Amino acid sequence: MATWTVSTMERTLNDSESGLEGVVNILHWQLTDSDGEHHGRCYGAVGLSAPDADSFTAYADISEADAIAWAKAAIGEEQVTAYEDSVASQIELSKNPVTATGVPASWA
Image (cartoon, rainbow, N blue to C red; front, top):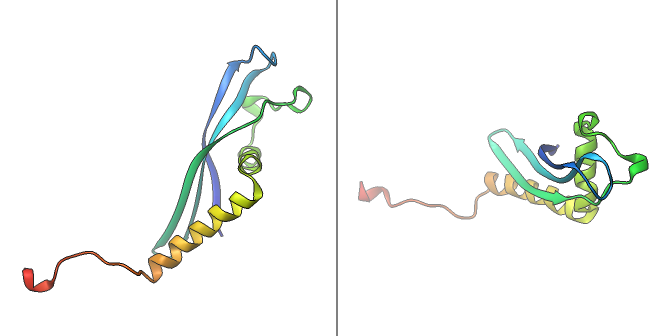
């Protein structure tokens, strides 16, 4: 099962437009999975829309689950699926490679 994490959040300390403090506007996320020694990973950053003052969550009260849900919502369901498929493909390609590197053993 692929694991989503948020490694850091960029925030505005005092948002003059909304009057709110600690408004998170960018989430840096990572998606990882593994099967034994085979690993896959995607990462990126996504911007968030301005918060609704009525449902605003103070920075100190944001849970990791909240941040992950916000990141996935901002990325969009179709792209979330594409990232998860990419990680699964990376693992499959690691298990069944189609290319190789090196030099012939006779060169040694």
